[in-house]
Length: 451
Ligand code: HEC
Ligand code: HEC
Ligand code: HEC
Ligand code: HEC
Image (tube, rainbow, N blue to C red; front, side, top):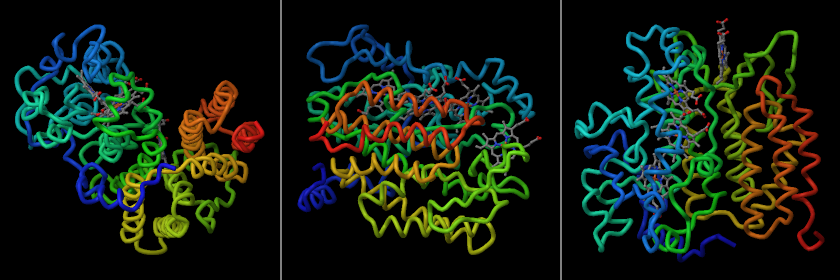
């Protein structure tokens, strides 16, 4: 069981609010911080983070710069803005400047401190893309002290290092670019001009990013052991909260007579009329009427599933709140109030998961619930199925690591076959998805003893 006992719960609350969570306590994001950005050259020396091989005996691998600059897409995110696709996006949008000079693009494709932040040092360049300080925070106050023998992770954070190791803070950071925020956003206009659809799941993307850190005994001693499922679960809760923030943002949330369309299920609108596909979607209780644009419910579906395992009454409050929000979007009720209900519950859920974690038994039953919800038709829409598949990957992977599921090869094959039917969003067929889930079920359903 990974659940903390009541005493450690309390100790956690008393001694480390900032580390245990509390969205309200979360540190300012790197691009909004009040410290000066110094530039990647300050991290890159071969004695610091630019070693080719990594050093024995050092707590960190020390080749972070090499991994980032050679393998990590974040290092090239700015360069993308000068390619043909970006030029075409900027031209179609009629931006007064090319993409690489437009704040609308640079804010996410580079570490680009806000206008209110101190002017970066001359060594900093947006051409470096999403640099170390874009995730770890401007280095002004921590650069000198973080290598001192007496420095601790907590003292570095006090000096302005962004706590990217903590799932709540990490979710807020990654989602600020991979979903958007009030400051920067890929609107439906930008997508219609050719920007790819955003799809993000924090645990999967943490693993996709070429690792420049190693979670070993030393790391766990310094920063604690945070399992993948907790990262996944918190990522879902923060994604719901972020979606609501945009929905309620007076500027971002609207476009003329319409709400911001990216908050809704793309395929609610984007499918041929001959392909009539309405059926009652009852995942949150009552079905909503045909002919309505549905909110993109993918992260809400995941959060409902997580809550069903850890706090059933809260799960039912959450379902009711989502249903009421959908009705309010359709004109029945006060949308702002209902959206705030959903946000309050998802923030509470994020804090709760950060502190409690999930037990093995809860994980096993969640893996099965993901499959069984799918089989009973909970994922008629692509975005939901996509999140469910990524979730299944995270949960099954963790269970396998914990020795709770055998046969890694069979699990991988099963997961690959599920992902395979999700390759093209426009060709998504719910029945095929269910077929693959049915084939996968025995791998997670059989009690361990009989396998
Ligand atoms: C809210 C943050 C955000 C904003 C604003 C933004 N982007 Fe992006 N962009 C991303 C992310 C994140 C991806 C990667 C999506 C993925 O792979 O999941 C991306 C991907 C892209 C890609 C495709 C990259 C590839 O590897 O194929 C292009 C091109 C692009 N953006 C151009 C632009 C342009 C031009 C603008 C301004 C009009 C812009 N972006 C604004 C976050 C943003
Ligand atoms: C897209 C975000 C991102 C960027 C860009 C980034 N990092 Fe990280 N970094 C992370 C995450 C996530 C972790 C793991 C969580 C943690 O330990 O803080 C991490 C961990 C680290 C660690 C801690 C390893 C340990 O054992 O404690 C170091 C050191 C580090 N990064 C250095 C760098 C350097 C140097 C650069 C630039 C060359 C860089 N990072 C760029 C996200 C990023
Ligand atoms: C300042 C904005 C920003 C932040 C913060 C950020 N990203 Fe990204 N990320 C991007 C952009 C832009 C791209 C697209 C680059 C490209 O396609 O070449 C990207 C690409 C990626 C990719 C590659 C996706 C692919 O399709 O191959 C991964 C993985 C990723 N990010 C993970 C993360 C994680 C995990 C975090 C949080 C620790 C994070 N990112 C934080 C902007 C950001
Ligand atoms: C409420 C309905 C609605 C929703 C939801 C919606 N769109 Fe659209 N989309 C439209 C309309 C209307 C247009 C304009 C079509 C035209 O110009 O003919 C459009 C245009 C587009 C285009 C350009 C197509 C073209 O032919 O040039 C793309 C790409 C696009 N949307 C992507 C998305 C994505 C991705 C999502 C989800 C994140 C989404 N849309 C959600 C209604 C919607």
